Image 1 (cartoon, rainbow, N blue to C red):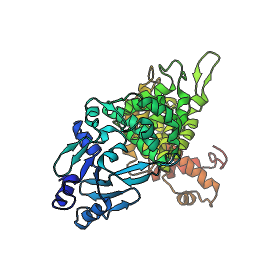
Image 2 (cartoon, one colour; image 1 turned 60 degrees about the horizontal axis):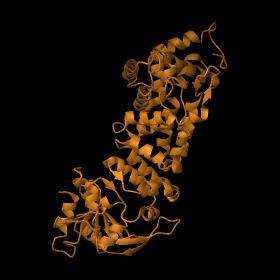
Image 3 (tube, rainbow, N blue to C red; image 1 turned 135 degrees about the horizontal axis):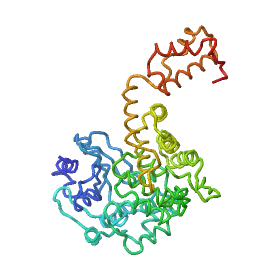
Image 4 (cartoon, rainbow, N blue to C red; image 1 turned 180 degrees about the horizontal axis):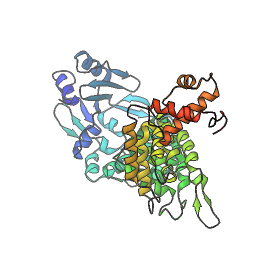
Length: 459
């Protein structure tokens, strides 16, 4: 049984029978031939908290309900998904706030406060009766029109995040904006500033994980929304990249994102989106007209971390994406790609290696011609060989500091660290296999003989 069916069964012959209505994606998506979402919304003309407690007491909800009396909402978990139960309500907003004043209302009044007409359609939980409270929702769905229940100015004033949602829905469903809706978004884009970074992050994440990400990003830029929370991207518009590229920085970025859209992790998509964000700030032109971007990887990594933290992505995600950006030029500077280069890259990228390679391949695919000498099949083969070799042993000195001290009769001090670094370099260069303790001892004794021994400040 679905969560909706479980709730319908539990509320038969109760005060709620016939008065519970599915709303939003649970109604919209099946009408579009899509699977319903795992999280569903139910609206009723009554107290949502009372129904939520009833479901808890009847064992239908697997956790004690979380209620928000001020907003007339309650969250329950039913086997199969999460359910938000909402008291039909009207809302009014203060200009600088996202916290509305709420009043109980009819189902039609409740429909007017929702984001788009396609999300106002209702389906009765018990009878399967369909209702179109505003009389236009079903027609808009059939005609692929994205329209707001009220004038767009009012709808976007109430909750500016709806402007981001408009872009996501337009591209996800292949809809088009109703007349005046795009203009209203452009006019009110600045109001997005009152929305928390967390809410923008969540909406942006949904957009990035869709198959239509490049068009959504293009719309965000055109409508002025991207400038509100990540204005750095607009710096790349029209920035020529020279002979290797057919596109400017922004168009190249969209192309690289398109290479990975809907078939990669969020980390990869973010890496593709941010990989060249440092280019506009590092662009220079040689006397012969050659365009260069010295240090754009380092500058871009710093910008990436700052923007993602601003949008309240986790510190780990922000650092991981920044690391991909910082290193994305390495393959081009490691030609031919040697076993030593494979070992160093494996050591430096760690668990990010696969995502890093995906971003680099997408970047190369967007160029007029792939960077000279980069053979990604060869790169992957060498990296796979390194992974097999290092499955049980890390790419570091096979000997600990204490073992080096015993082998060379050294006291604690900087010279021990020097020899440990030399052994690590030997592993990375391929002169030692990972975990080869005997080989490390032999190399250590050879290199530390009186005629070869170097001081700690040399080498």
